[in-house]
Amino acid sequence: MISPPEWLSKPRCIAGAMSGTSLDGVDAAIVRITQRNERAHLELLGFANVAFSREIRSALEAAIERPISIAELSDLACMLMQVYADALARAIADAQQHPEAIGIHGQTLWHAPTPHVRYGVECRTTFQLAEPAILAQRFGIPIVSNVRAADVALGGEGAPLVPILDWELLRSMHEYTIALNIGGIANITLLPPGCSREEITAFDTGPGNVWIDRAMHHFWGLRYDDRGRTAAAGKPIPALFEQLTTIPFITAPPPKSAGREIFSAALLDELLAPFLHPMLPAEDIIATLTAFTAWSIAENIRRFGNVDTCIVVSGGGAKNATLLAMLQSELPSSRIIHFADRTGIPDTAKEAVLMAYLAYRTLGELPSNLPSVTGAHKQATLGSITLP
Image (cartoon, rainbow, N blue to C red; front, side):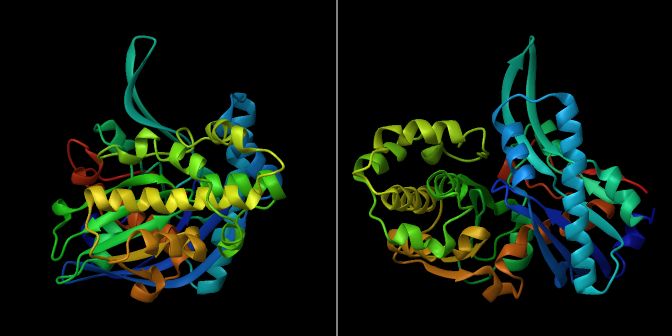
């Protein structure tokens, strides 16, 4: 292992790989990271995406939504790492450069950082499925994984982790900026002009694509609403919309984080049940879920942020033109731009780049969580290192 001072002394080529709550596949990025005047410079060298097969996606959904055996869970970790390896290999080929280390997220199957008691013991838990040893042996370099656990152990939410990257890439001396990532769950980072790391606020706002994707699969067997065309063909249902807006998480103050255990398929099915009849077009349900997603993001910005701002959007939801139009309608005084336009990094590559950056910081023994964001008692170097 290279000593931390030596590690930070020159540019490093790092890979990052991420699979999020959308359960659509693995994104992998190869990034050159350089420290310049106490600010990190990140250059994307290569990127790849590998979609989950129907079988793996179904198995992951099953692991999230109902009990499965340890044997199934163990095999699922192996299967998941094969998809990670495929995505990383393609990204390496795209970059034509071999990385010095890899940061991976794994697949979140459970996230419950709020204290709860089991068998008389108070627990805070988060679980990202992964088996980093498989990747360490495949690529012959260190793997950084399990990046949320340290923050949760310190009393934090373990999420979001992206604010440190948002601060590096998006902060401005003159303009209030909000970084919005719309994955399965949506999250925002609030960056006041000239803010320090300690002045950042960030949190999950509610569902991003997770319920829209679920409904698209239910009605048409599709993985997502391509560019929001289905939502655009429908009209929001007022009664359903009003019911959705009463979900307590949306208006709860930060710090807060969420996953599929809160915005579950079971809850969505329960909410939609009264509206599933032939006289009501399915497109109207998609339009309602899309309008609710836009409203929930905007409501959090109205309550806890600044409406006169530049919103930099990333994630799969950045491709949903109807969702972005509804968000603009909710926040008419805000300016919405894409992450790629601000940074040169594709909107869908942001979280993979984040994993590379977290690995870089961990190997340099730098802290990456922000207590002002997560509520942790102190800063921590995140993740576990697996050597080949």
